[in-house]
Length: 388
Image 1 (cartoon, rainbow, N blue to C red):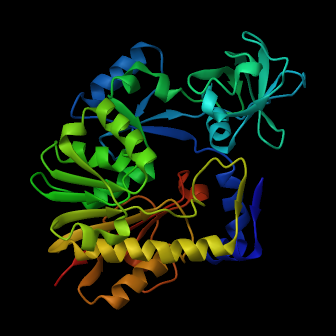
Image 2 (tube, rainbow, N blue to C red; image 1 turned 180 degrees about the vertical axis):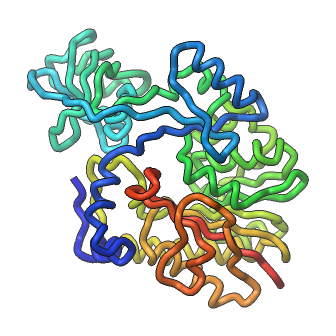
């Protein structure tokens, strides 16, 4: 259930006009493709595909991105709630994964019926009681508060079905990383070179940082920043699994102040992928947003860009990306940035997929991915050059 106030709906309508209801319907469902990026420092794309197909998985090469593979998402299938004494309630983020067929892990369990025991057939439901999957309980409900790791429910049937990527041996071995198609284009737009200095300003959980390492063949000097100690620890785990830890300098820092705390860095390339309202993320089983969230996010985002621009070398490139769709957080943030700094110029992303931006003077140079048009996450990418 999407709970957006009039301001949020107006912001969505500003982008999509009369199609805004089609957009809202699209983000309540998953894309028809689930993507992963192959870690080409460890294995070739062809070898990964051969390994997966040998085990009977239907996997395909993307039409344009050499490092991208995808699986089709099947569904929807009907899930009925029959036994009210055998339910497990999942939180928002866990539920959205279970909706696609992932197992339910213990940290994502909010509560469950007291009668649930190991081996019971159970129904996984959202916090508002909607059934999304059937499976087998791997825990006793009375122990749920003490069990904070491992699988709580092995999912056997869900509304949508896709391979459980994080349980594949290729994932565990660091050969693949689940990532949306649109997000992969961020590093493509950045186009970092071997031997260059590259900064990822809001780096956790590490998907784009890992992509930078692979794209530059492990030959760039990569700095990755994030303010959250917990998220940085999780990112270290990701980089360890991918084998990239020795190739990245990880720093805990507030990226709004890189120009003062890390003024000695002269970056050739910078990614700014800041916190946003995430309105383009799908599937959404429920979401609550107020227009004040959009306003706050846009004010926050410009701070990251201004700081990053000060450690960018003349001739360097900065790429800004978000997984949201509002003009306030995307086009208008960039227009404000370049309006206040004559040394920053918008350049074309040179991405052939997706659509151009909307409603502002430099829209022709931006890239947008629209869920109901491109069957992807809702996403925005802008590319800025420092010319003086």
